[in-house]
Structure formats: C-alpha cells, structure tokens
Image (tube, rainbow, N blue to C red; front, side, top):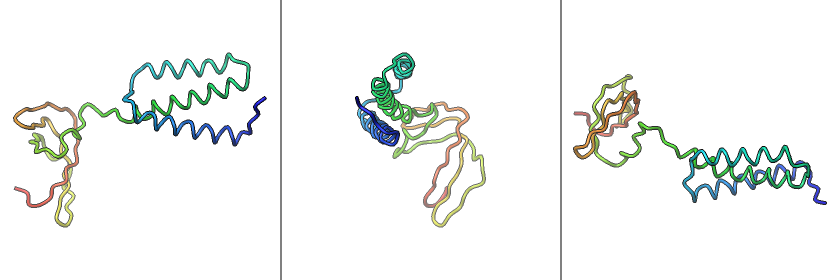
Amino acid sequence: MLYMKKSQIFFISNIVFIIGIAFGGMFHTNSLYWYIFILFFITLIFFIPARRMKLIILFLVLFFVGIWRVGYSQILPKDDISKFHGMKAEIIGWVCEDPDERVGSMKLTICADEIGVGGKKEKVSGCYHTVKCIGKMK
C-alpha cells in the first residue's frame, strides 16, 4: 500500500497545482463548468473511504483548480481600457484627482464617459483611469 508523509503530500500537491497552472495557460477557460467539475471531485473525497483514492482525487482537484485559476485571472472588467493600448484614443471625461507631476511626465486620473478610437465612440461608466502623459500638454 502506498503511504506518503504529510510533507510529501504537500509537495506533490504544490507540483500538481503548478502543472495545472501551466496547462491553464494553454486553454481559455473561465466558465461555470469548472466550478461544477471541481465541486464534483471535492464531494467524491467525502464518499470514498480509500485513502489512496482520496489522494488521487485531491491531486485532480488541485490540477483543475490550477487550470481554473489561470482562466479566472484573465477575466477583465467590462470597462477595462487595456484594449486601447498602443492606439490613439480620444477620452471624454474629466480629471478626477490632482495631477501627479514628475520630471518629463505627468500622471492624470480621468473619470471617463466615452472613449473613442478611429471615429467609433464607446460609452463607459464610472471608470477611473490613470493616464501617463509624456511631453507637453496642449
């Protein structure tokens, strides 16, 4: 029979979780099915008496939690402006906080109502964006 010390179980659990994170980078997963799948395996742990099977199920749960973790971290808020990175954008709004002036640059926190790129305007609500301005302000 396979007997493992608690430190070995902890070490293998961490390795399995990290492998799950590596696999999660290959898949784009952020759905409710992962919750159901993980909960199914967690409930199996309580109904299976064999210690060996409990360990295998624990490792499976940690593997899928690693995959789910990557998908969950990639969910962006609705009003995220990172999709405009590298583009010239027109922001309609107002400066919410005092400017943070530095040598050669300035950071502005803007409460935006609309963001426009290439003639298309997109309404945003309740957004606070920090914009780094380099050079002279007009």
